Image (tube, rainbow, N blue to C red):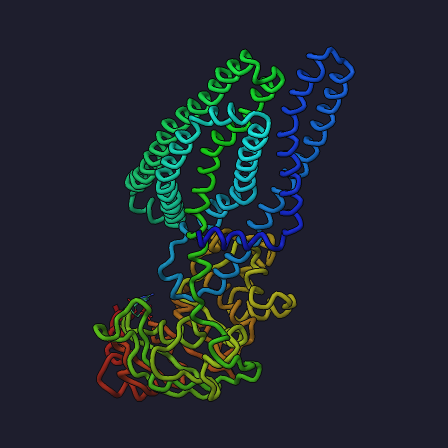
Length: 582
Ligand SMILES: Nc1ncnc2c1ncn2[C@@H]1O[C@H](COP(=O)(O)OP(=O)(O)OP(=O)(O)O)[C@@H](O)[C@H]1O
């Protein structure tokens, strides 16, 4: 119920259209109630009294009100659709905007397929109810009540007797509603899972093929598809049982009316006109009740879909500017201080588990190049993800130019940190658009400058369409190394005071890597740079090297200093030297 009330609030911006829709619906209903009464006039005042003029006037009247009703229906249909589309438009926009604001912690757990199904199928179900179902239901209820009032006003005894089977009809409706609700809940949930399977399969199709697991994937999808089929069939069974029964009870209303009505007409306590009008009126009782079955279906879908949409909308945005003082980041120079920083992921228990990072303290001066080394899983990526507030520190403080990162305006802060992440993501757009992603106003000259620094300019130039070359989803069409270099150009173009390279050259060959590093020397000048790399050649020029192990700093110093110590660094150096010698 709470969700329904919340949904109704979305109608507010379309109030005028809701009023128009409501008014035309009432007009249509009133016409439906008047028409049978006019038929009564044709019989009782026209035919019974051989007054053909009366018949003609009433017939013309009937024609007139039918024309008005058609116009009302047209207006109502349009108004309703507009209201529904407005609600969907707002909901989708809110959902999308909220998804943009949710933090990494949310996406660590969220399933893309589930989100996509909420954005499409679930919102569509909500629209069907708001834009059609709710008004149809209201029309039905009004017609039902109005018909009973009109009939009772004309002949209450017959009306009362006709209603004998209505409680049975209402009972089956109640039972149907109770059972079909959970079925729709399951169907919506299964659709989410089905979309997740589809999305994961398409994203991972290369792995599926590489491991020849197509048949396993097929059966996984088939199982979920079968499950959805079964639930839909169960729901259809409920409909198959309930709808004919409702129709039967509806038929009983009509039958009672004919039987009792004929008896009353024969007795002379009911006119033939009233009898004819009642034939028409009884449909005003039967169809709303019969249609209610379908409308309940539409309503239940929306009732089950709305919480799925609201669940995402209600997920708190745990990382935002609002949590801090939203300081301007324009003057960021790049002095970074980790002050007793510890970090746990949201699903970790600090009482039971060790932190991903534990008590990290070190300072970096503006323009320094810091290399972060460590075994896989030692916390290197986590460390640098704290800079841009992809996650917030759990304990301690992370300062940039003496200001806690949580106190900066978030977007501004992120614009000051150029990141080349471990996994390159490129959009299906032109290479130019991909490089200029963070700075769409960049000139061609600036784009080319950034590309040259990333050692990708001549390659782009060699393509038939140059910078206008369209690259597929996730940069398909480029090699891993080329993708990394485009991502590097994208970060360099931002001209950020802090540059973060997370294994940014891991996919390029050694010769290109050293060329990139030569070029990067100039780019890094004056910028604080964090380099995560496994190859020692990439960290040779770092001013300082920090070695992490199990989330703690175990070594720190220059290349030379670390080489003279026992430890991870020297081991790594010796291993790589030995490998090179082979
Ligand atoms: N979203 C997450 N939720 C929970 N634990 C995570 C999450 N992401 C990473 N971890 C864990 O945190 C630890 C540190 O991961 P991180 O990616 O920072 O390591 P890394 O040193 O960069 O490793 P690599 O060199 O392999 O990239 C790992 O043990 C990893 O399993």
